[in-house]
Image (cartoon, rainbow, N blue to C red; front, side, top):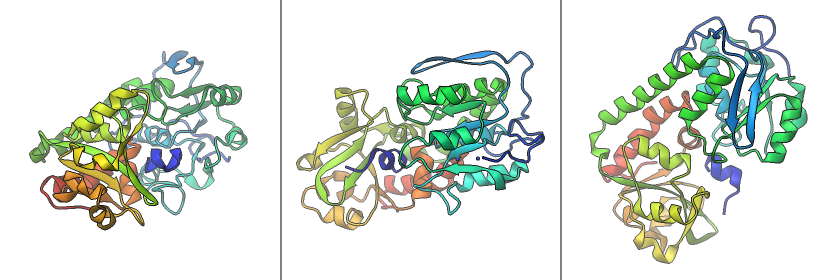
Length: 351
């Protein structure tokens, strides 16, 4: 089985930025992008107390140096017109700068100088020293799976707001709401959410053939095709498929009910023919691409594979827009991933 990090993604900013008085905080320009917002902080926004998985965190005053430990948290900040002082390096689906094209485009639109931003490596766990070096006054981890021990250590650096109900499973809408409260921009966050939801609504309306079809998102281990991995209904990928108009696979729903806290479940390849899904999405990789899977005597019995109703996702950057969605990545999901899903619905395999 792939590593948890790879499953979650496939599944960072020491110097201050030149945004005013050498800090990050709200810029003076509209954020543009998926949902423009005038980054004006409400006068009565602080103190604000936020509930999360490990209790409550109180933010006493407007934060001006925000670090993130979740991969999508920086996106939401940027969409609100704020560039963090620290964020993780995007090692799966990222660009050569360890970032994403949608984040970089938003920072450029904000007119910010990102040359001093710190992208820290979190492949071995949370880099506490690197985060502390950015001297943050707020740490965000809505799009993360920080443990309670991690939370306690981060809280010694600065007030920390981790995930709410499910590790790695905070929906982008909730991320926007909570982060908006944390930075004193609830009104702008509400507008950002509405604009992003409208983008999805318009895309769904433009593709009515999706309605009534079911979908499952799978993963495979190239060296062991005896098991079919499936992302459960608690994972953000199937949730994004639902936002695009798909119904959840009955098989996935059944497996999800067995362990509501799990974000993946296994189905024996011997039961491949039982996988109920009009469309199957999976990560195409060496040894587990469409050709190998369809030729496999067991996995190849998945009905959607046999009928050509599948997306063999080979572009990690595009797939990232679905696996860790944000107000910035949704545009890429709509423009680049949704057409693949529509092709699959029509029986035209997509990559």
